[in-house]
Structure formats: C-alpha cells, structure tokens
Length: 140
Image (cartoon, rainbow, N blue to C red; front, side, top):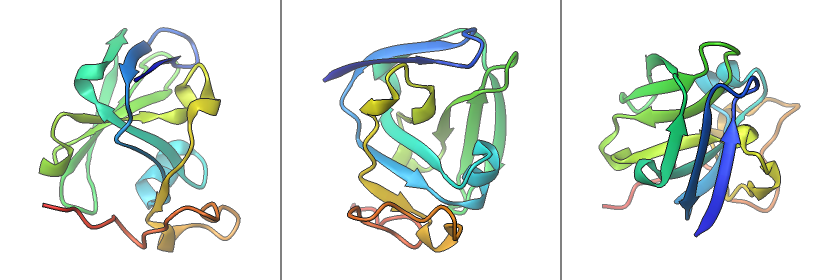
C-alpha cells in the first residue's frame, strides 16, 4: 500500500488514501482528450473505499463507449477534474483518479494505453507498455 494525496488547482477539493492501484494507464478516447484538454488522460484505477475525498464536487455524466455511464467529478470553483466513476459492472466500487492531481505526480507510472487507435499523431502511447485499440478484454 502507498499513501497518496492530491488536490484540485485551487485546493478546495483534496483527497488522500492508502492504496494499491488496480492499474495505471493512459486513455486516448475522445471524451478523455476533450475533458483533459490534452492528448490523453493519465488515470489511476483504485477502490473508492481506499480514497477519502474532502470538499464539494460537481458531477457531469456521459455515456461511454462501453454503454456505461461515466461520471466526471470536478471542483466547482476551479474546474479541475479530480476523479471519475463508472456504472460498468466491472468497475463496481472503483474510481479513476486523475494522475495530474497527485501531490507527487511522479508516483504515476502507466502500465497500459487504452483507445490507442484514437491516439493523436503528436501524443502516441508510450513505448514499452501494452496498447489496446479500445478497452482491454475483461476476464470473468
């Protein structure tokens, strides 16, 4: 377990927890690109129960490629996206923290890239990690 912490740009929303991430990865889907303002989002999948979020968040729901509802949680003051939740049964009890909100962003080490087929020419997936054209297969 690793103790992590992070916050939004203005500091109104903070989080901390002892966590062993399920995975860390870069998502190149259109929704993540638009939401991040960059070529991809750096995400850390972790159990909701392991992270304590303090401060008010606003939410924005959208339907992802899987057909599940993705809820983006962000600071209502500065707009920083802090984490996402997902109604996909495979994501039950999980949240995806936005790695750039970490107090120590060097903690983040991507293990895979998803939606790699949508990666922009100027933001290609990192060499040496698995790339999935869309989502990786889910084992049952």
